[in-house]
Image (tube, rainbow, N blue to C red; front, side, top):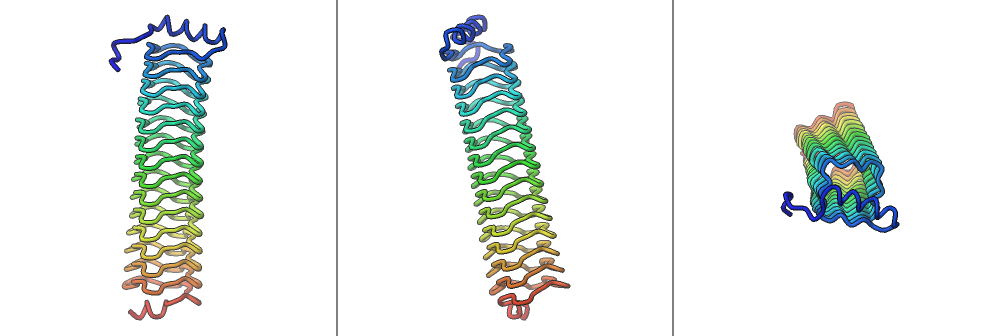
Length: 316
């Protein structure tokens, strides 16, 4: 759409909002000029805002649930506390927008530019963010439970204390992201790239991270019990004091990984590469080390009682 051409002027658009509210009908604001408009706490539920220009507008606390906003320009828009539940926002421009505390549960935000957007404390549970750009986005304490983030780019995003339980993060890019103390239990991180991400103290119980890249990631103190890490890359990862009890690390690449004081009780490490890994004071009770490469690994103070294949692996 040519942004210099509008189907509706700002005055006409604002009049349509008022009339639609009075007549208790859905507002039709397709390709409307609403730049800088004051729509604070306005009721735009179900409104047709296709390709509307709402740049720099104030929609703080507005009701926009179920609205159709695909192709709209929301750059620099204030949407703090707005209700955008189940809104369709495919390919929307939200650069510089603020959605702190906004309700976006079930919203459709596929293939959308959300780089650097402020979603602090926002509810994005069940939202579809597939393929969206969330580079550097502010998502601290955001609710992303069950959200679809397949192939999304969350590099350098701030996700401290965020709820990502059950989220679909397959093939997502999370390089350098801060996920410290985030809840990722049951999340699907298959083939995700988490290189140099901060997952210290995070909860990943029951998550899937097969063939994921966790190289140089901070997993110190993280809870990873019953996690599937088949063929995952943990080269140089800091997993000091992390809990991997009952986890599957078959063929995981843990070259020079720091696993000191880690809980690896009953973990499956068959065929894993643990060359030069630090396993000092680690608990490997009943862990399965058959076929693992332990060349140069250090086990000072480690518990290897009842570990399967430990003696054979160490003799090699």
